[in-house]
Image (cartoon, rainbow, N blue to C red; front, side, top):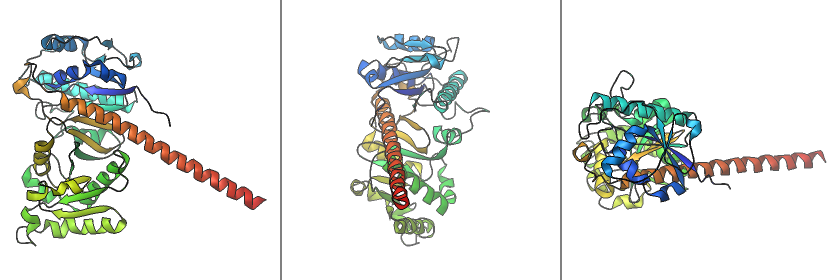
Amino acid sequence: MTEKTNIRIGISVGDLNGVGLEVILKTFADERMLEFCTPVLFASNKVVAFIKKQLNLEFSYNGIVQLSAIIDHKINVMNIWKELPTIQLGTPTPESGKCALESLTAAVGALKENFVDVLVTAPIDKKNIQSENFHFPGHTDYLAQELEGESLMFMVSDEVRVGLLTDHLPLKEVAKSLTPELVEKKIRLMEASLRMDFGIIRPKIAVLGLNPHCGDQGVIGNEEAKIIHPVIEKLYKEGILVFGTYSADSFFVADYKHFDGVIAPYHDQGLIPFKIMSFGKGVNFTAGLSKVRTSPDHGTAYGIAGKGIADESSFREAVYMAVDIYRKRKENQELVANALDASSLEKGFLSKEKEE
């Protein structure tokens, strides 16, 4: 089985006035990162030089104007802006929002055309990036439109993996958005991802209840009994190891350790415990898509932008995970192909025996 060693990482740089480029450049200033991957930043030489000077970093990079000029195992900067945008570190501006979208659009385009193998996205400002061409609550929904497949927001660390039934929704919209179809789709997406992307043969999945104490048998709410439990029973009968519902107020004390993945009905219910346990080491992975996309588990952090103190750990973990998942998918594809070849070969032998 061959393993691709020069995996190309397409990187959208996020909001230029946040910490995105700082954590990117700190990550790849370590030359050891270039031994197993090739970063391609969608920005410009002038922007990279500006941030590099701000951080007093020393490294070389390959500026390009066409993707065919990418050099493996080097830092590549794809120039998508001719002039240096106005950078006001710590302050979101219309220009920084526009540049964030241009970087993301260019990186996704390169991913779709296979110039890069995976996508790692630096943080955007969800309000600042809004425009006629971007009207999404975040990366996940945009990528679900641009790439094949169904998306699952999947927060992953060594300690715990948490997926969401609903992601960037106002709390008042969560209950009315839950349907049996949605619950089933998200559980299936998580189960498939745990197998194909993380190599877990028979994953165990826990589903949290929407209401306090899972509704207390209908006293506090009935979404669990009416919507979630029937889906769990159906999928369990199919052989999917899914269990629940579990009360979210105590589940993350210890119960989570018995499962490979956890499904939470809404954003804060899953992400608050995740970030308490894993902040700085966690990765936001968009499961279910035809391409691999990861990002760090933090936002633009305007308050510390330009101070040189942003921690690149989560971004580095996002790069590691993108590479690992890409390799896992390739291995899985080769195993499936080999199994099909073996099956075809066996049928050929049987057919030949019958003829004789």
